[in-house]
Amino acid sequence: MEPGGPGASSSTASAPGRHTPSPFWLDRLLEAGLVLSMALYYCAGNTHLGSGPFFRLPPLSTLPFLLVFMILCWYRPAIAVAFLPLSLPFYLLQKTVVSHYSFSAAEISLWSCVAVVLIQALVRRQRWPYWLSWSELRARLGPLLWPILLFLGASAFSIVIAYSRTVALRAFREEVLDPLVYLLLALACLRTRQDLVRLLLALFATGFLIALLGIGQYFDMLAHGASLSDLPRINAVYGSANSVGLLFDYTLPVGLALILMPRVANAGFLASWRCRLLALALCLPLIFVLYLTRSGGAWAACVGAVIFLIACAIADRQLLLICGLGLVLLIGLGLLCFHSNISSYLLERHANAQGVGTLTKRIYLWESALHMIKDSPIVGYGLDNWLCHYSLNDVCHTTNLYHYWITTDPQTHRPTGLRSEPDLSHPHNIFLQIWVSIGIVGLLAFLAVLILFFRLLFRILAHLYRQAEADPWLVWGTLSIGGAMVAALIQGMVDSSVLEQDLAFCFWILILALLLIRVLSKTPWRSQSASVRTM
Image 1 (cartoon, rainbow, N blue to C red):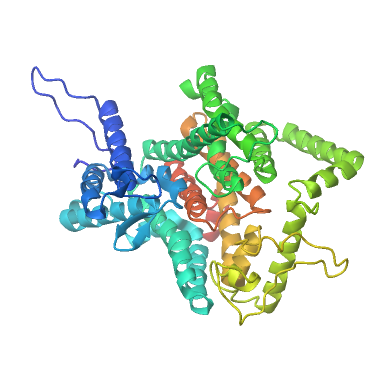
Image 2: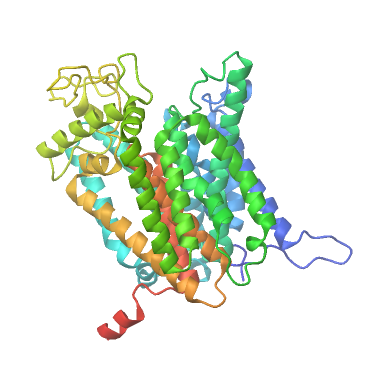
């Protein structure tokens, strides 16, 4: 088998008297080389990261680092593709590639891999190990193909009807096209269980890296005299602490699934306490930084992911039903007894000088979004064009449009607290955001993707649990993906958990990983009884 093929060996026979690295260590060297070369290329000449001579190098002089990355990618495309999540959080710190054109680390990594893979396909032709025929691709995507195409089409059409087409085109490229290109690329290149594990571990490592940066920011604030009571919310490389929580929605459940994973036959290391303790130790920095973000939505999302993982770990359906009813009863009693305290806490949380909390502001934002949807329910207003129609602001300069900005309550005439924030870039609800951005067709396509995702997720879990010797890595992967999607949707009720570049990649990575697990576990799209009826 040629180097770069699925499951290809990473080493060759050693000559007498010479020591050749084992396949394990050769893979680790390749992984380190890919990460280091892309990091050096992205940092070199990137003035957003520093002011020294290294950060002011001209773009052409940094190309050798990119060349090293592409050479390593040529040898093992699967590793490079699986490691792309490591580049996701830095999309705000874009690097100038040529002239005045700047791109994020994720875009540079993605299109470098695409270029290498296309060149390989042209050079090796029929000997290229990653060929996927249309029927094979159709089988891998299954019923998800049509809602994905509808979502892509509605997003592309939104560019045409957008007030600011330049902004809509950029958002389409970063938040829709690039993640879907990555989905197709990864479907071709990632074929083995090792590829799946590497992808999910890279996703978790992304959150771990941001947690380390957040801890560094925390100690830096303390060193500069900030008191614990007045400590600002941790935001790491983002402009908002909520963005850290949103990333952790997709990454933290990967580690939590290892801690809460049910015992399965032949689980080996995954079932040991050493593995669970290691996972707990790696999750603690994320949990600590999540606490420091003071993001209520992210906290609720994390709790929801934990409940989901515990529920999936309970094999007895009767016990699961009893536990579920008990939890609902407990929540109901809590709301009944403490509803005043709970509502006061939620409505006054992060209140401004006028006493208006962030949840109250979100309610007015949702009203603005509903008014916008009422006036254009079919096609929406274009990707990332919310600001053009929401308010008068410095981001989207418009004076000839009607704006839906609610600065005073129409009934009480009290300030809503939004007058000081004219540049809120989305309605803080993912379903309203998608409807406003790309219309009802895009929203229905997105809902179809979610329905098919959870339908397939539970089918895979049932299929794995029925097996006497289920692959524990596939069980862990399925639980990780499910917990992450649950967390993303929970926080997505009060924030934007998909239509941002890093979060869009994360969302489609969960779809990708589930499709890969379906193939590895040999789970049919339909039940056997349904298959018999259609014959």
